Image 1 (cartoon, rainbow, N blue to C red):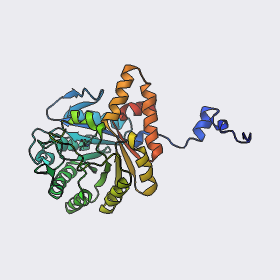
Image 2: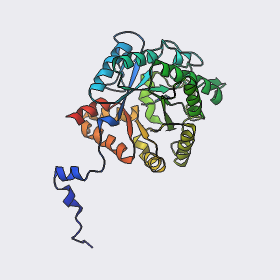
Image 3: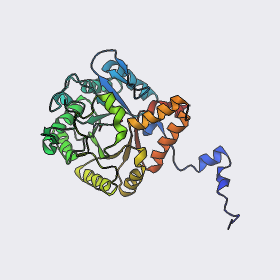
Image 4: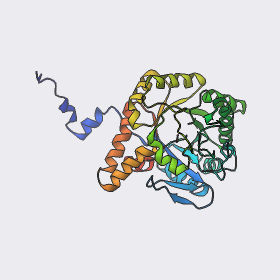
Length: 324
Ligand code: PBG
């Protein structure tokens, strides 16, 4: 029965009425822009599977940092390709590595920009796994000691937020201890608490040269089929002292974002990962979709699902669209 008192279309009748009743708004302040830093000078290298993203040397990374800060984007997340790799990934805590040098240089040039450091070993190990191996098994507790070194080195270099993405058990507590012991109690931890073993990381692994040399990451990253387990991971990381909880990837996991949002009273972040980015860029370039609309609609959906923070390679484009 059509009850004529109720006509939802009334509140859609003009742009200003729609704006008045809009439940979710996307803002430039929601974004974190991820970049890849490499050794050398004046480097700006294409990443074939991630159009419009580049690998930058530290000097050029500083220019990008200035640019994103001028757009109003509050934060940058730094990933690195090291000069050397070994069995335990020791270049991950080398203060002369591109990541640590970029952090120091960006902090100096753009002090207000929040620097997020990804803490993981896969870009730094010869075998491409996210920890120290014992045979073909990643040794959890031995890896924690290495992650502590990486986190402290990044805090020393100028990171404001440490973001462990390795999915070892107990890493948040281990990193919190190590940071506090070195007087970095003001450095936050944004935990990749719910990180699925996902096919959507493919372009990133090309970009960062971090694909595992044997096997896969299913012993430590989560099974895409599991939602209850995600809530357990979140509970554990909060108990260990995580300040911000991240869910990754974003689009195929918005149900998880929504459930976590309802359950916790800490900030929730999502990582709109490389594969999600690459699909939109590819379809946009082919003219199959309206790239601008799809970018803004996708990012809005992450916000609506409950994310406070969106880590996205679309940040610069989206900021330009929102600032138009
Ligand atoms: C490192 C790491 C990965 C991503 C962020 N940190 C890759 C992986 O787990 O293989 C993926 C980010 C993206 O796809 O954009 N462990």
